[in-house]
Length: 271
Ligand code: OGA
Ligand code: MN
Image (cartoon, rainbow, N blue to C red; front, side, top):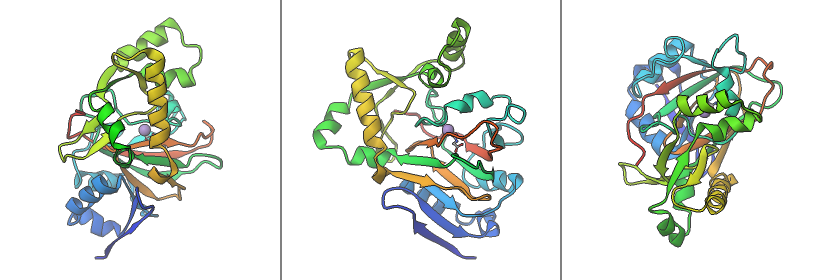
């Protein structure tokens, strides 16, 4: 039962080389959870798990959110396959899933089923590493800052002329949420919480807040913090949604691109 690991980049991403059977047996689950926290992204190249196997494996790592069909949510822009596909139109912008919840999801597992001929590669940025590399005076300056995250920030990128009803629906479905800019995790590690959803900095002049958010966004997504995954059908990626931002390279809605996603319940409040 081999279980080997290989770093994908110095600051983010580890490939795990193990068979489906080894993974499903669950004997390495603690090691996998630890690696996920330390490395942000885990790759299982051409693992080829079925949807059922993916859910079974996910259960060895945490509690599965009953989203989609039996824990499999279809990532596709095809509304015939996913009636909430329009929310995925915002995924080409850097984001943290469920950032407007008190307890963001722990992690997601994503297996590639059908690829797009153009675009559709996925990038992940390590927000722990981005925080760690900040100059000390900046770390001190950010200690008490709080950022408002809104769905409007995401949706207005892909819906340039929203109706009044749409605008209201965004805030109703996902109420704006204020979080600390720096997440101090129970482990003591710290990560930056930014992303396309970051709208303003509490108590800061609007323009000044915007400049700070944009600067930290650019900082966090520098090449040394980013792993870009070029998909092969059957690849599985797990990302730590508490210490990673992600985005997909734009792809055509009719490309056929399809991935199976299973998400683990959050375990720690963003604080
Ligand atoms: C997601 C997501 C990126 C992709 O599933 O939350 O942002 O590559 N997916 O489709
Ligand atoms: Mn996402």
